[in-house]
Length: 276
Image (tube, rainbow, N blue to C red; front, side):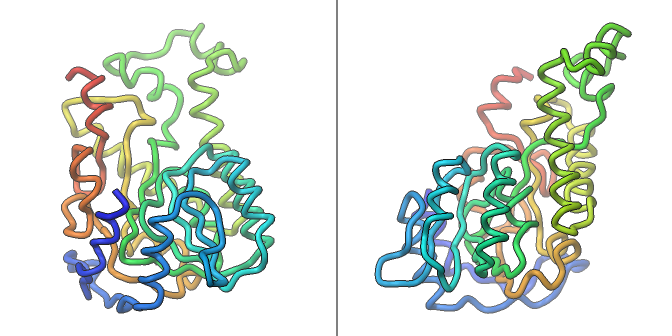
């Protein structure tokens, strides 16, 4: 996977293919490209050898982000991550806030990386190898969530009561994710639309598709226009990265996912389990 991401370096595109979002991207920087290549080949959380650059190439778990907290001051941090628990990611976001170094988002920035870490950063360079995608229709309401895999059935009174009293464990997990997003984005002074917009888009795409999977198993790609709209001048540099599922920059995930719309996809393994 890393070698494929590294190979994207030659696929620089100066403008998006969508006329609505047409604007120039920054050209790739050879020095940053070399550092990113090294980071994508280095698992874990470390200072890159012979540099003052931190490489965070790991899932978001306490052991990893606490190691980040113990590293010396750096000129920048390269972050590539498949994500992790949203609540746990908020702990890492706090550490990054306290450290204050500029960050380079490269390779996969999935799930909690895109939902929590990215909107918590202040000086961000989006590298051309980036694939940024959020996980799940986070903002789906209970009634729709309950009936999603039940042919849109209406929840009975007992199901509503169980949810209200906290006895529906599945919904607790779903609802806590939405609460964490609201609290985190408010704390970072980022508009809730950062997650609400993409959640609504995934819901719209999912409703139009003949096969349904668990709400948490939908993935929505964040494009340049979305990131610029909600993160504004926090983005100090942006290279042409994967904008849509069929974007030439999206090589890795095409082999293991199935698109249901321009920016929404499902992993093939989750689609197979749905048995549609």
